[in-house]
Amino acid sequence: MARSRLDSVIRRLMAQRDCLNSAAGRVDDMPGLILELGLGNGRTFDHLRGLLPDRDIYVFERKVAAHPDCIPADNRLFLGDLTETLPDAAARLGRSAALVHADIGSGHADIDRELASMLAALLPPLVLPGGLVISDQDIPFENATPLPLPDGVDEGRYYFRRLG
Ligand code: SAM
Image 1: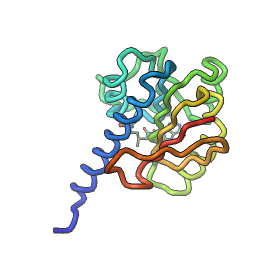
Image 2: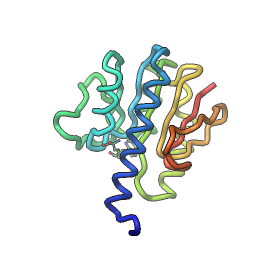
Image 3: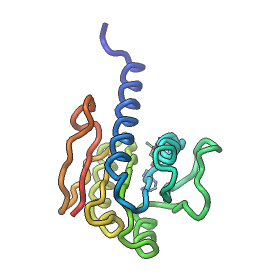
Image 4: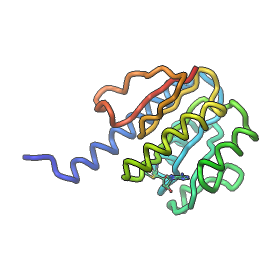
C-alpha cells in the first residue's frame, strides 16, 4: 500500500523526536543554555524540557499560540521576529547555548531559505564553541561541521551541525 499522508505525518514526527532525543544526549556533558526557535503549539518545547529538565530553555516565537501547558515563563520567552529577537538575545546572553533547536519551516521554500540564511549570521553569536544546532532547514553556516543524523532519519529531513 502506498504511504498515506497520515503515515507521512507520523514518520515526520517520529524523526523529529529521534532528532531531539539524540541531540539531548549529545549535549549531556556540555553545560549551556538550550534555545528553541519556533514554539508553534509547543510540542518540541515540551519534549525538550522533559529531556533536559535541569537546563534553562529560552524560546523564540513571533506570536504565542501554544497549548496552555506548553507556554514558557515570560523571562524565558523572546517574543517577536527572530531577526530582532536573536540580536537582543545575543546582547543579553552572549555565546551561551549548548543546543539550538530551530523548527521554523513555513512550508514556503523562498521564505524558509531566506530565514535560514539570516540564521546563519544571527545564531553563531549565541552558540558556545562546539555547540550543536539542529534544524528543519539547511542553515548555511560558514563555520560548522555536519554531523550524522540519528539512525532511521532520512537525509534532508533534519540537519545536525556542530559550530566552531
Ligand atoms: N516546534 C513547534 C512544535 O513542535 O509545536 C512547531 C513550530 S512551527 C513549525 C514554526 C513556528 O516558527 C511558528 O509558530 C512560527 O510562528 C515561528 N516562526 C517562523 N518564522 C519566525 C520568525 N521569523 N520569527 C519568529 N517566529 C517565527
